[in-house]
Image (cartoon, rainbow, N blue to C red):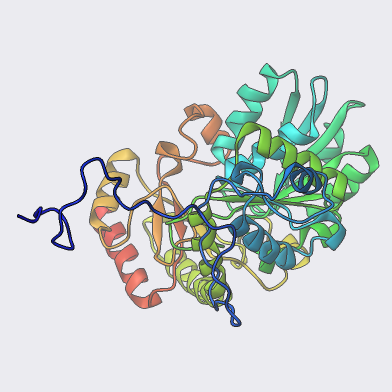
Length: 411
């Protein structure tokens, strides 16, 4: 009687081996046409013909990949697009993709600094970057000085003979202050220090760090560039091959590589970035004006508003691009903030920015929670401080949700 497990209905000879899958082929199927969308390459490793070919790849005599922690197709495709947007010199390569924005910051610091060096940095950086400056770098023997980046004279005064780097954000997170970039460029150049610009908030549409005199530009690609809160990545571009190699080696050695899938998602996000940025920037200007007229709001921080503390600098640094981010201080404390956030349920309360949807953030309980109350107050971050990452929705609806929640919370 035939064996019921035999698909042909015939009994297998005793001891016979089941059909074996073929060995892995060396090449993918050929096609005269190429895919319109970049395929995802999840492979961790890439095969070579022999040891000589692998040597040639590692030594740069042949293009190719070996182990994905050291680079992969999707990271290269994404990096090339970002490098083109930021004007990275071709000789410096497409830059380095990392697994997060903080990975990009860390790769720069680990790749370009050593024990005994000194860093001058803005005192209004992203909260985790501030923590890295205050706690992690000193453990490695690297000293830091935090200064007001809106005051180039303060930056210059903080320089030491051992200063090797200046790190700033053009527009600070979350206080939306605009750094004195021309003065900082001059101060860094005079000290012979590498100027590193975190361009996450401003994006390539708002500021061009390398063209303006910086040596390194970095992004949290997770935010505005990818734009959909589904890919966590960072990127670093430099002005020279030597600096690029130092950052790349640090990222590879410390394991900062971004995943192929996240790179693929971010590349897709870049396709809509110009449209998203234009719409969200226009929406931000409208919302800033509406919030400024609301009695329950003490102050609005948006570069396009005439009362912005750095308004006289905005045109020189940012031109006509005022960005997609704004912050405001509402009246009251934590109780009022909680009532506002609950009332604004149509607008996600989440510690992120750059999504297609408008999101709300409370720095005192998220990005700047590592700072004590006095340190936050020195930056102007009160309990009533709210950051708004403006999305692409219809601005009337977003404004109505914000104003309605504020009035309910402070009634």
